[in-house]
Amino acid sequence: MIETTSLGVSLSGKTIISDVAFSAKPGEVTAIVGPNGSGKTTLLRALSGDIAYTGTACLDGKSFAEIKPWQMAARRAVLPQASALSFPFTVREIVKIGLTGGYSGVSRDEEKRLPDLALQRVDLAGFSGRLYQELSGGEQQRVQLARVLCQVWKPVVDGKARYLFLDEPISSLDIRHQIVVMEIAKDFAAAGG
View 1 (cartoon, one colour):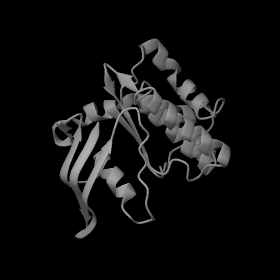
View 2: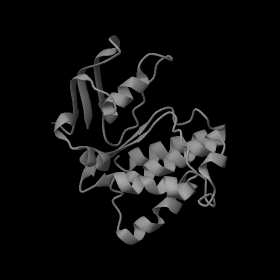
View 3: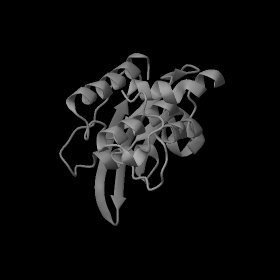
């Protein structure tokens, strides 16, 4: 379980969020809702280790501060709101990045197929050789989702739940693909993540 108590974030001397109590339990989809500018992304960035925070944040009772970044990458994957990329990478190259930071939880042989399986899961089968920059915004968003899925492909490894942090994952998607993403989140939770 991920839990925070009295979590706060200040940026450039301005308090963005304060005294946040939050928990996300394995097997459940947890949504953070609120108006624009209310600190949802800031909370996710703090939980992701991207920005400093005050208070306490724990994973299975262990403080985030005690967990090495590579250990955290094996337990959670983060999909930011947007991912800018200036280099001519193929879709497959982007998705394979998810295999370098985390631990997919599958055998080496299976891992070779993961990028294609992840692309199929986000309805982008056949896109692996295309250039990322030539895709629509919604297609790029789904490529990034495939990348984070590769990072934590199995929702539970060695009896430990893993987490997907998705920041506005459906913002650039059509209705059909919004449903695909919500089903991915639901299925991940149903499998124990």
